[in-house]
Image (tube, rainbow, N blue to C red):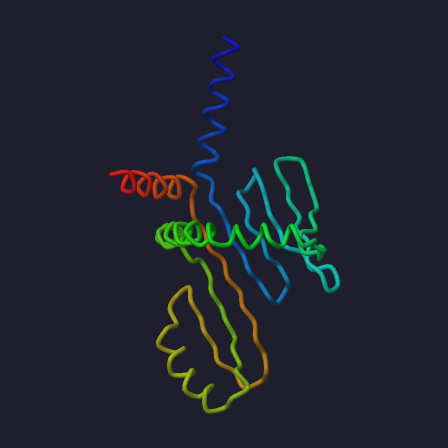
Length: 174
């Protein structure tokens, strides 16, 4: 009986993971940048003075990481990094292919951009382009007031991303 209850709880937890929305937000007005799976994890980028920190919440645990601090490398470490770059290029191409496929599973809930290039003729040309791009969820505004802001919210689901990963794996191994 206890084993059945544990199995049901694990099933409910996995179903919650698969069908909970993954939310990605970039808001330059309020300096709010995060990726979250509600109730499970949240990765937030926080500005602390001139540096950035990553705040990670996993279930009920919270961590703060500082990966952007500068490290000094000795000569041997520099040589190792140069050798790794050639291998990384192939891995990067595979990763970019996966990202292109994953974009099909992402739904844009909100995209608001206020752009000023500080070039009046270019702003006037972009004004016509932006008016053609605007839709229900997408709003591009060209201004002449030196304001540049970006507000973006996208949602996807883990089951969609897993489905894309499986199809890429299957087609790669044929």
